[in-house]
Amino acid sequence: MELSLLGFINLIISLNMEYQKIILMLIVTSICVYWIFFLPFEWKERYSLHAGKESILRNDTKRLTINRFRKAKQHSSNKMPPPYPNGEQLVVYRTQNNKVFIVDAYCPHLGANLGVGGRVDGDCIVCPFHQWSFRGSDGKCAKIPYSASVPRSAQVKSWTSQEINGFIFVWYHVDSTEKPWSLPLTINDDQFIYHGRNEFFVNCHIREIPENGADNIHFNSIHNECFMSGKMGKSSKFFQYCHHKWNSSWIPSKNYKHFAEIKLSHALQIFGKFYCFRMDISGLQVGPAYVCMEINSSIFGTFRIYQTITPIEPLLQKVIHRFYGPRWLAPFMKIFILGESIMFQRDVTIWNHKDLLQNPVLAKEDTSIKKFRMWYSQFYTSNSKSLTDEAISIW
Ligand SMILES: *[C@@H]1O[C@H](CO)[C@@H](O)[C@H](O)[C@H]1NC(C)=O
Ligand SMILES: *[C@@H]1O[C@H](CO)[C@@H](O)[C@H](O)[C@H]1NC(C)=O
Ligand SMILES: *[C@@H]1O[C@H](CO)[C@@H](O)[C@H](O)[C@H]1NC(C)=O
Image (cartoon, rainbow, N blue to C red; front, side, top):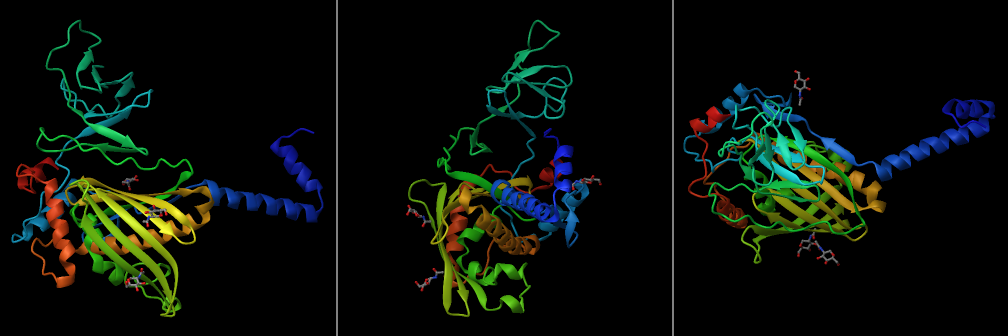
């Protein structure tokens, strides 16, 4: 018998109803099983805040960016810590040997953007305009196709970068003498697969997001309502007997100055007295924008979440959580990613609308916020560029 799709359909039509039902059910079940176990779950929030509205497409014009700046600057008593990034334009490319290079985007010849129409040739990136080739390792121009000599100053800056678990990190420091840190190696467990991610655009200063790790009180205050009741401020009658309970602590790490450790424990409280679904979470904050979390659950074993913050503009951050665990956890991970996304959305709502206070009024129980800010200040030097009108003109 010919095994074409048409033949298969004809075969099914010729069967009696009972068999047809069974085959249909098998097909639907296999699609579901495939979706559950083999497809990652993705939650993407393509919205950001501006003009006071939360659900406007992230397609901001320069004018809106400048307006956000002006608004932030209006709080003149409020000296904001320097934001990232600082206007650098970079191009990231991968060679056929799977090496990643990051270089300045503009060709020193006539200023074409290497990232728009440029192509990769060996370890080099070739400018789309006059085909000059730049080596990724040192940024030097290796070839000008129509010239026998290469001017000595034909060079782009090559940035130090490292790829871990498919994330590409670039070393940025205003003081060029500083040595790059090494990053902790992470997933080395073959049993762990990628289960999905969520992505958010958040309108706030970059420091606000990791600061939550040290804000021990906020867990029980905004993450207490059952995740099933949804976004912040939506308490549902149906889930009123179900609450998340948290204990947390934050301390700078003893091993490395640029590490800090978060310990978090979670339990789901039902009818105010039964506890279930306990989890122990240990988070390692690495530098200003990267957090590795390991989660131990009594029922589901161990899985991991990686949080990265990519500064898009001085007051606009892209936050991504990526989830990893054994394959058999897939059905649970889909629910977990959904729950975590809803929980994180509550933080996003706060960030999108809050003010950044340099001298907050703190209660005795809030001391780790103060410690966090001291720890975070190591990521700035006196040379860090602050939010000035000059910075606005770059953007
Ligand atoms: C930006 O706007 C254009 C057209 O107005 C649209 O096609 C595009 O999808 C938008 N981009 C994003 C990221 O929303
Ligand atoms: C938090 O700590 C208290 C006191 O040590 C303990 O009774 C409670 O079970 C802990 N809660 C969680 C969620 O671990
Ligand atoms: C999870 O369990 C492993 C093995 O028992 C242990 O080494 C690790 O410290 C635990 N992590 C957390 C966050 O409790």
